[in-house]
Structure formats: C-alpha cells, structure tokens
Image (cartoon, rainbow, N blue to C red; front, side, top):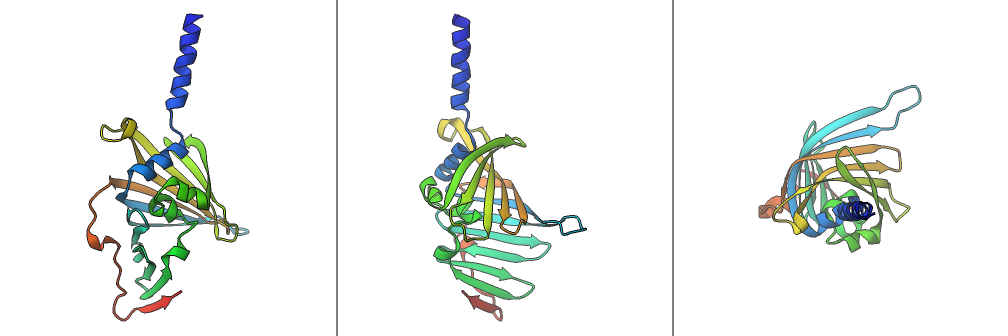
Length: 221
C-alpha cells in the first residue's frame, strides 16, 4: 500500500510539474522581452480541382522587442520587409519598389505577430484570442490561438515551443520559440520554423526603424 501511495504521489507530481503549451506561451511572454532569429517559411495553398497543393518557401531574419516592435526581413527568394516601429506597420516590396504604411494599433490585434512579439502579457493576448493547450508533437509543446473577432482573415494559429533546462530562468526552465503555423480563412497554411534564436539580446536602435526608400511608391492606409 505504501509503495502504491508513493507511486501515485510521484505520478501526480510529474503531471503537475509538466508544462503544457499554454504555460510555455505564458513563460515566453513573461521572460522573453526581445529576441532575434532566422526563419524559414513554407506557404501551402489549398489544392485546386484536378491539381495537387503547391508550396512556396522563403527565408529571412526576425527580431522583436516588447511591446509592439518587430521586423520580418525576407531575403529569399524575394526581398521584402515587414517592420513595426510601435506606431506604424511598414510593408516594403523591393521588386515593386512599393511601401504600404498602416496605423499599427489597428493593424495588429488578432495577428500572429501579436502572439509572439507584440503583446506585453498573456492577459492582452486573451483579449484577442481564445487560447488552448494542444498535444505535444514533434518534440514541441503547442498552444492553439483562435481569434475572437470573426470578421478577419485569420482562422487559427498554432505556436510551438521547445522547453529545456536553464540555470538563469525561473524554475530552471527555458522556453524557446520554435514554430508558428497559420491557417487563414481561405484554407492557406503558412508554417514558420525558427532557428538560431537569441533570447533577450541588446538590439541596435535602428532594428525597428524604417524609412521609405527614395523613389518608392508609398501607400498609406
């Protein structure tokens, strides 16, 4: 009986100590105030009748500083920049030499960027998303975020975290952003995989600054 009781206690402790995706998201938002990484993005459009699904792959660099500043710099196969400076969200297409500027406060809200880079805390995320832990998969802990607004183009987002041991983090655990899966209302799926993530680095002041190139067509929305 004593052995059985001890076994039950150990099992209960293991279950309570084991973090799920939602806890990992909360830990990430609390402890990671800035970061930078490399990313690979695979976008797959739904298959058309008589055709197989087609995918496009791109890659670049990503950086963020809470709250509300981030940059996605696409380098391959085409150059494109998405920069949020805290006031304005800038989108720059190098080939088209076109810049689109939108007021950031109305452009982020229920977006994947809000999940991983913009929101200051979990409560801010819960105002925009319904959050739920998902089963572990591919060695990662996952959380599913469903936008509360029903009129947007975003259907759901899955965020994957890699959890490890760290001597300089709360409870000795580190939470590393590993993947972001986005499903839009048109059935298009976008999967971003992050690598070489630096946690809380000192980022240069110009990381989130953007000035439209001379001669570029600037569209303000």
